[in-house]
Length: 271
Image (tube, rainbow, N blue to C red; front, top):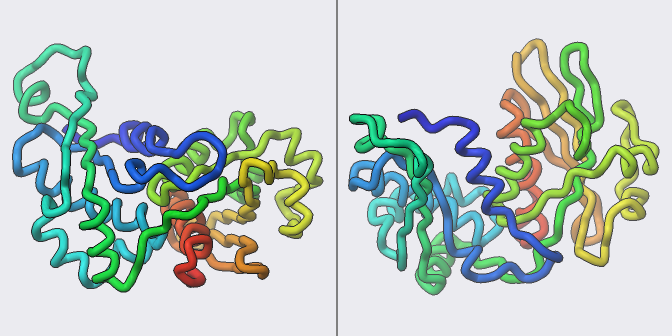
């Protein structure tokens, strides 16, 4: 049973933190989810390894830990810090049909971890948990595609998959992403060819609930046959810029949200 994009996006959206920006609940930071085909060990153990990598990033706010040299050793025993595993049957209302309904039946697997053990792993990796306030990111994104340019908004027909993908990226960092309405974009005077001043965008976010503007530009490259992304965020009193190239927009958004998390968590500036 292949893992579909729709399944992954639904999973990501379900994990976004809700409510006003504040210190995230510990239980939310120290759990991760993935999709497995069946509950047997041959799918459960690799699923736990994926979840361990996710929870280290979620708890620390540092996306670089997903590529840390120590991760390979830690994922050899991915069950070490686990306190509970639960499953949600994604085919709950479908009858069982041979292999597709039994062995390869897709489940959303949720893995919960012991915070102290995860914190010890983070220390081993030279990191620490990010238990402070986590702002909501309001994304002001200009998109330049072949024959199509637009500001990503919460209402327009364009960009539906991009909006879902941003929620998936937010889940990975245990952050919440807000896509502004067309009215907000119009009020801010934003255009696809402009470079908005980040301080000016503060007037168009709700700072009472901890919103913070993340400005971005997404360009389709004919040479690379892929996207190039540039991001800007103000943190620690100054504007930071970073980006990526040669990727799909899922990876571009992970780069944007992950870079913001890295900055806001005090883990340095993204490359």
